[in-house]
Length: 248
Image (tube, rainbow, N blue to C red; front, side, top):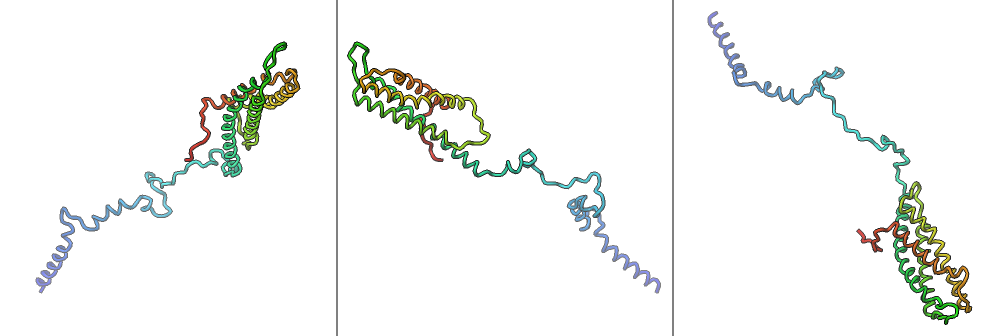
């Protein structure tokens, strides 16, 4: 009876060993051993460490989003960074009016040059003791019309610069300052030239020889034209005859 019991025990132990042996054979790994490395690779040191425990010394620092410097970091106040619709509108209007000022200024050169050319034709010829040749009415009318057109265009041109919105903090340099300085020459000249011309015309109509301050009409007109042309060259050289721009 004891022999039978011992044989039964041996067979039971052998069957248990046969069930567990395949997982222990060389060259084979159990399913748990194959999954363990991948699980260890997916888990980070921070995840493996229990909550409340200090991180290992060689653990990587948690990633933080990159922070770029803001405008306040660069020294700009909130008032400076806020949009200013009024300033933007003034700047656009200022630019547009100065463009018109420049175009009209170039156009004004045409009647001004023509008035200078026709000036000698509208004055009497001859000296004392000689036969005086009076100008024709056509010459006088043409010269007067060109002078009036020049004055009208000139003051219209100037108005676009005078009444353009002023931009706070804007400083003028170089050619702009020369351009404005020459305005103190051709500006008064454009006022005095027609006045002296009217005085000279009145003296001639009365049979008098042009005299006094009226005789400076031609010299003032030439000086005015030179100063005006120089002011244009100061800000427009090289001059491009372009009175319009293509729309984008």
